[in-house]
Length: 204
Image: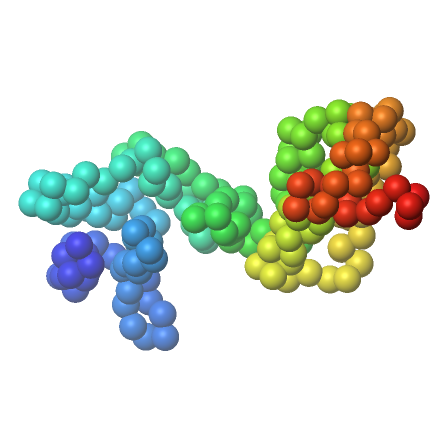
């Protein structure tokens, strides 16, 4: 498919993008293909027309349900011939688990991640869990989850404080206090391998 698109671009049938004086049209990543093209209705029609014989010859159907048209710098982003998903500039989307976006503000990135963390917390029935289970959830999941996005995105130290409140609220919310009685001392004093804290009655 890459050779087909390259040949179509060199013939002038479709138009790619120019980078450092070289023309490019497609980049492969894992099992997916990114096509960088001029944003116009005619060009999109020609690209779709070029891919049709490839699908028939290779028996590989293009999944339009998973395909997306991403706006990088187009002023007019309206293409009737495209039936798949459209992603505007400044919107965060996920690809293979990675958050991607074009010209996304830092505050929007933080808000996007906060929403995902809050959605995770809302799925957990924290009021039914004792404190040591909530602490373990934070240590084993939430902290690595936040660290994952810290490594992917460019953060400032002052922006990290936004994550303190949802985590502290998850741990110390008064509505969860009654959950402390749900675990007996026998359970808490079990070895860590069995879900306890690994302590004994003599230490309490």
